Length: 199
Image (cartoon, rainbow, N blue to C red; front, side, top):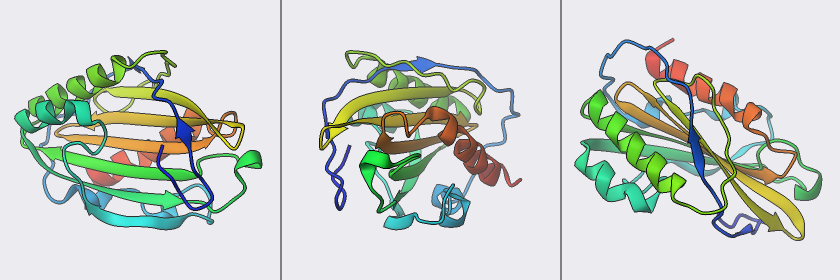
């Protein structure tokens, strides 16, 4: 987790992932700037989110540095991300305090599928697993839980990553353990997926 105003997450890297369901969408090779379909501020679950970092290009290590080389080899074309923040009290918070939405476009769906497998493997190699499941999400989903503390309060970072044809999407949320849950993020993932598919 990254430092924020009044939010300095001191996390050990304690994460793993569990591959979840596969969808059955028809391959269409989505083009254009992946940043144009990232979650907008008005699509977030509460009105108190502010833009912490505006939408900007992201490198191949946007989600996991250990898988960056494999992602480059799998035909990565471009990626973008945007980060939101809620300036509220952490110890009583519900839902995400920080939320980063990202998307990466690959030249073909098979390259995106291979890159997602590399990301999954990199996440799976981390010790002390907290396994989450996304259920049916896009053309394959992965969820990761990372534990930590903030000023003595238990915290969690949840990473959701999924594929939509030749795109890989991710949401990274940080919040209070018990106040932030995967079920709060899956509708946001569905919204971003719908935006990308044009519907």
